[in-house]
Length: 455
Image 1 (cartoon, rainbow, N blue to C red):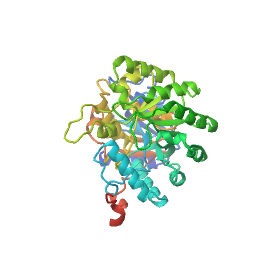
Image 2: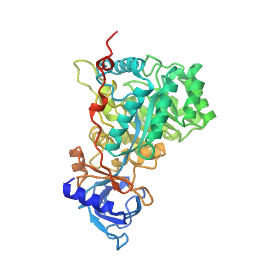
Image 3: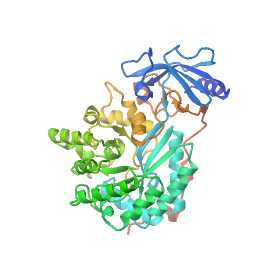
Image 4: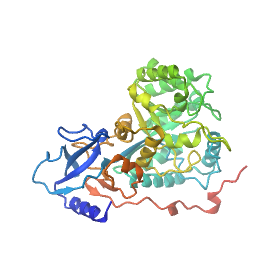
């Protein structure tokens, strides 16, 4: 954003009075009530609106000229204004260990092995707090209002990681809203540890979860998946906990129909989220359609992780990947299945890159998944959709909501996607935030800590 506009916005908000922001644009999918009556909506689904701000909240969203007269005004010159966004699937406990963990080779098995070794060697309370805090500082600086993280909860470490999460959730209260789901290989739910883990999660107000593969194995290798699903659903029902599962993160796997049928069997419709579901897009069309219909019947919500799954899936040395690793978003949305886009891993063995920036994740998702021509409400996949799946009050602009939003140096969605929007201006509760992403200097480790030598 130009220095002049940034300064004018800062000064106008700092006055502390009602303020009418005029001549701004927001995708209709990111407005809580959709476009207000009389507001022009362009071919990309972007509405021209005014925002009336009062005491740190949005008092009204109106068509141009339709809000209360008399309040001081500031024109944003037609710029895009978006709510702060929601990351419904990430891994704060794994993040920012690149350079410390062993190399993964960019493969899923390599990432599991490297993460296991890093976890055993380093995941103590202070290490978890330090890296989670760094990740949240990145997210906050990029305009993320809420995050659901998955937490590796292996026996012997569940208490440690959930204790660290509880501390960091309290420290970040009011800045980034946090939820957590337990992550273990699915056969862990058939062990004596299962009930203790369920109690740990319940004590911290989390979700039960897991990855639909056995310990040390691959997706598609669970012969007793139905019995394990019955066990985890029973534990969840006894504690009134929702579920968030890693499902079918492979080219060929078949857990999703089992999850859907278990959801129906246990009366848990609307309370189960499934991430990844990569193999769904590789099924023959009739089988894919039947599975999508079953997911709809079960009330499942699905979350796709496009950047990470493109990084991991179909990777073989010296061979160009043949497929993208993402779930069939268009078909799922057409069938009425709730779908969201999320960031997943960040600078760890499962994904060596990223910065907890959901605007960037959404921009990549548009290109990877062909969510344009037309955009058809795709902006909601990073805002309203994940907020509804997780139950966060974030991800949209509406009357009565906190005045939390970002002003972008873009006048159209193609401009917004073309540039990284690194000059976005963040506003929280009606005040401009002076934030920058934390320096990597904060992650510097001693030479001994920074290396895990191969065994």
